[in-house]
Length: 142
Image 1 (cartoon, one colour):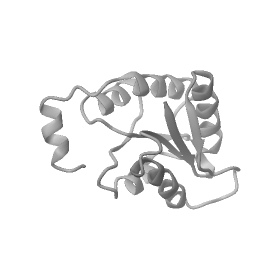
Image 2 (cartoon, rainbow, N blue to C red):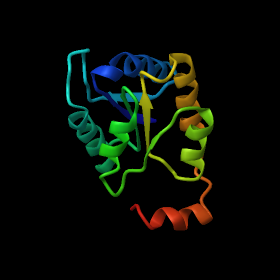
Image 3 (cartoon, rainbow, N blue to C red):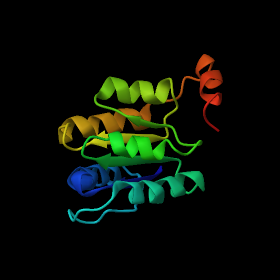
Image 4 (cartoon, rainbow, N blue to C red):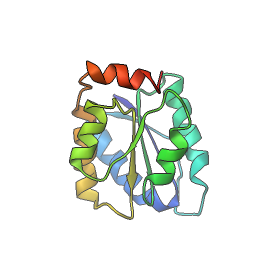
C-alpha cells in the first residue's frame, strides 16, 4: 500500500521509525516531511499529507507530532479526511473498524516506539466494518 507520512519536529524521530517499519513490511511510503528536528509548524505538513490523500495518490496517511492532537485537528478540517488520534492498539483498531479512519495521528511524546509500531500494524490491517457505521460516517464525511 502507498502511505503518506508527515511529522513536525516533535514527531520526527517516531516518523522515521514508522517509515522504516512500513518499508520493511513492503509498503510504499511518501514522506512529505519534516526532514529534521528543526522547529516547524505542523499545519504545513498536515496540508502536504492531506493533499496526497485527497488527490488519491495515497489512500492512507500517518501524522506524528508531540501529542497527535494538533495533527488530528488540522487534518480533520478536510471533509474527506477522517483523522484519529490514537493512543493504544484498541483505539487504532476501532478507528478503522467503526470510523474508517484514513489518517492515523500519533503523539511521539506520549507513546513508546514499540507500542506505536504495533498500533500502525493493527491500524493498517483492520478493515472497515461498514453497515451502520457507513450511515454515520456519511453524515460528516465524503
